[in-house]
Image 1 (cartoon, rainbow, N blue to C red):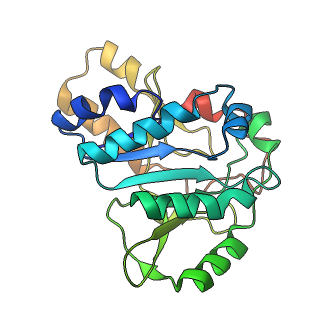
Image 2 (image 1 turned 30 degrees about the vertical axis):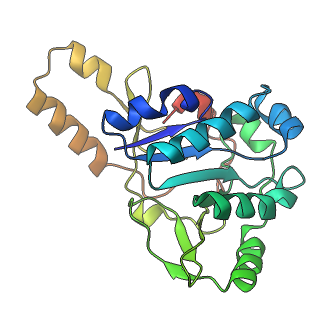
Image 3 (image 1 turned 135 degrees about the vertical axis):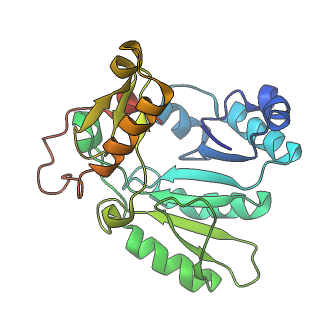
Length: 232
């Protein structure tokens, strides 16, 4: 079982989470600069996040993946520092292109992950690698195994043909694609008295009608739902 978190509470909760059976973590962390962290997130919480990551490492979580949104003119010059941090801590780094979800998402510009990939590959001699998890990241690894980096590129190199993800919101909506508005109201199905078998059949039918691909490039203003509303 894997947990995605901002890690602000991990210093307190890491041990208990590990004991309950959570073994893997995905942690959102876009910068190691305290002032920039506060500017991006609106909270001066970088020390809490780093303390949480240290506690998670000590508790035996593995792998711990750092999700860094690569933003042009914001944090792209900090990627080398994040690489050094992940090597020192034994974490997997994942560099992610921002998705233009809602007006806030369309207001940011992605860093050139193709160029960053080429630079890191040359610097560390990285080769193609497979990392357990079944997600959309394409991974490279140092020959000595000390560093692994993944690239999640929904726009420049979309992975729609192999996407196996759906997302259930806090309101009970099962979204079938981050780049489309297709959804199934599972809360309504449950409250209508569906049995476990009927609910399972509903979810299976929803997955079978996942859209062929997102429309971020073709119709960037079509999607008005914000990422924060969709959730994980």
